[in-house]
Length: 315
Ligand code: ADE
Image 1 (cartoon, helix red, strand yellow):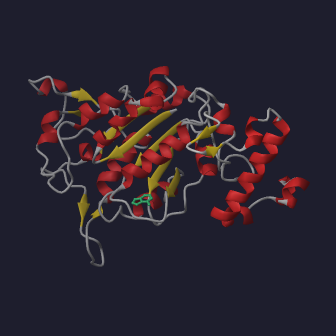
Image 2 (spheres, helix red, strand yellow):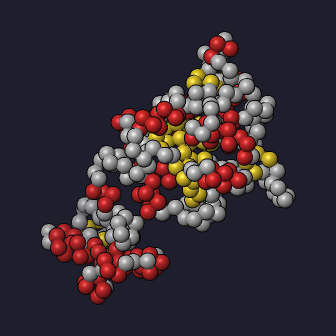
Image 3 (cartoon, rainbow, N blue to C red):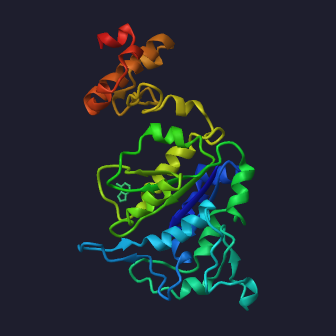
């Protein structure tokens, strides 16, 4: 799976080098490139936002910068060469490098940024390179991937429909995901509208009923939920099948216990150590139903009754 992330904080995604995600990159299951949106700006301040139409607090991310970036990464327009990054010959230091778009970026370009409000720090290309393998041409890479190569463009947005396990499962079948991280008061609504009109599969998702400072955390959450479903990502694939929110009937998971059988006076439920697998399954199913009913009655209401067995109806 090819994953592009656009953010004014690409360094945020350095953590993707760690843990299972880092291993998945090493195994070639995922290729992640974190891009700095400011690489597609042309003004001296590398500005990405402007005041809201109609007034109000805060700033809104401008459509022009996003469009140059997204056209480039989606292969909808010729690669855009930033005016201050014409070719590696033009630089007499060794900080220039090739971006995934084919444009040449430089530390110098990033360092001129007046980004006191953004926390934009250092060379964004370095951040991208530390997370990823750099791909020189988005369009040809996508076509080589074969299968369902049409990219899905995803914007985290607190005002969008909730991202669920069902969405994670669906998106785990895509070959190419492109995430756009908003900041400030969000992004100009014409951006998703325009790309939908171009035939791009555009999704906007909230990860919960609370407001974050930007889309980076939300993208990290979605990315983990999606990629851990990729075949070969998890050490033990069974752990995915048995989890909460998985399968046709989404129930919260039963409690988990390990050794010792009694700890600080609290015993593991005896059925779990009885060796009777039928009884263990029944106990866990009952616990899942009871917990879901107590904690998330909305999930019980969504259950497909045809998938409940007679024993379930008694609980
Ligand atoms: N950006 C800010 N808050 C968010 C949320 N809850 N979900 C997705 N994106 C966000």
